[in-house]
Image 1 (tube, rainbow, N blue to C red):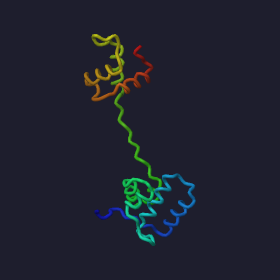
Image 2 (image 1 turned 90 degrees about the vertical axis):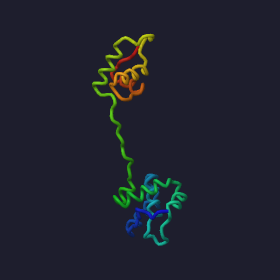
Image 3 (image 1 turned 180 degrees about the horizontal axis):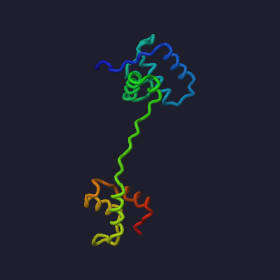
Image 4 (image 1 turned 120 degrees about the horizontal axis):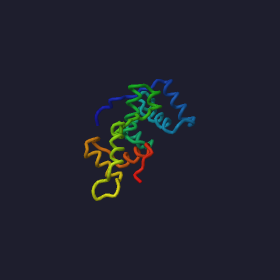
Length: 153
């Protein structure tokens, strides 16, 4: 196995603080788990540090969690590692005002030949055929119509 890139070395004060949090047990479970990971991964501990596989087995967490916790601790500090938040990934909106206007025009137009009325899937497919959007699901069409208080009925 390659040498570890991120090595955790805690000071006595940091170690005492983490042990205090673990012994109280009055903190969020995720934070307590991260405390335990850092304590087990600490290279400055008396008994030596544990390997990632041992930490995974002892705490029942995944290897990426152990690696990520060590990395954040080394790069950003203990506080960031304990309170690590998952990155919020906001998706780009597919339906902007122009696309919504085209959708309304479609809904108000006659249904395709052989159909009595538009379905959500037909509308989604037609928007793609007209190259108004690259991709769109029938659910996105439905929620957009609902937002605009329109119905196909």
